[in-house]
Structures are given as C-alpha cells and as structure tokens.
Length: 197
Image 1 (cartoon, rainbow, N blue to C red):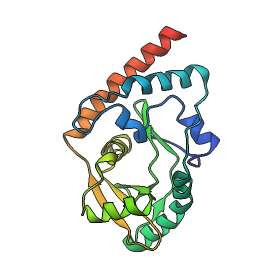
Image 2: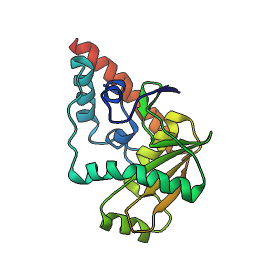
Image 3: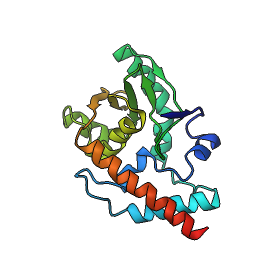
Image 4: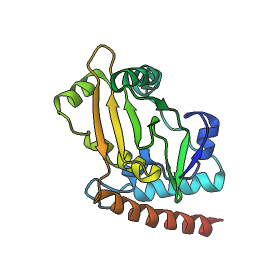
C-alpha cells in the first residue's frame, strides 16, 4: 500500500484520487452478494472522463453531508476518549490501481470510518443492534482490502445521542470477490481510456 499524504477534501486529495476507483464508490462496482453492480458502466465512464480530461466532476454535497464533515473532528475526539486509541490522520491509500480514504488509522491493524447522519438514521443504527449498516459493507471491506488491515471501527455520531460503534473484520468470502471484480473493472478502465485517447 502506498499512502499519499494530503488533507482529505483538499485539491491535492482530489488530484490524488483522480480516475481511481475508491472504496466509497465500491458499491458502484459490486453488490453485497458479490454480483456486479448495475452502476458499474456509469462509474467506469465517469472515471474514464476524469483520466482523459484530468478533471473530476464536482460531487454534490447536501447540507447534511457538509454538517457531517463539520462534526467529524468532534466524533474522532469522542472515539479516542471511548476506545483510548490514537487516531492517525491519513490522506489517500492506494493499492493495485484502486484506493481508499479511511477517516483514520488505528495502531497497526485498524481503520476508522465515521458517519454523522441525521438523528433518525443514527437512531435506526442504534436500534439495529451491533451489526454494520448494509450500505457500508463495500466501503469498509474495501478499506481493509486496500490497506491490508484487519478491522475497521465503523462509528455513527450524532451530538447528544449515544454513539454507535461496531468493529468490522475482514470478510474472507467477500474480499476475494471484491478484489476479482476490481481487477476486471480496472482492466476495462485502462482499455476504455486507450480506445478514446
């Protein structure tokens, strides 16, 4: 794994991940059951355009997403307090043509992924028990694939409510399926770029 030192969300970060499949979008490549995603083609074309034009399209950020980014630092401090762990900031992690941007690295074996959703979503996570929300399976397993680490602590945070923290370990069936689908996707991406250059 190669780590590109930059601040997440900065122009340098966007430049580092330009045209590279990244874990937050792995759900556009593979479904939770291991089948190819129906969004694959659209994502392939998006990354092809980024590589050729050397520009990334502005991604929409709702008020909720912006609020979540503002609360992330607060959530990290609470996580450190609860777990007595040090969160190490990381920019963009790259491995085999695809990448990930965990919200932090923990020791030698862990990653941290923070979400700061609306209150009703957070309550749903708390009531769901101790399992990872299914919509984050590809992202968290993708972070483990890219970084080579053993676990991700997924944290949902909303001020005034109990935080939701669940540890996600490597899925020995899903990670090989993800890797295989990513390799096919990256090969097709290179071929598509070559055809258009």
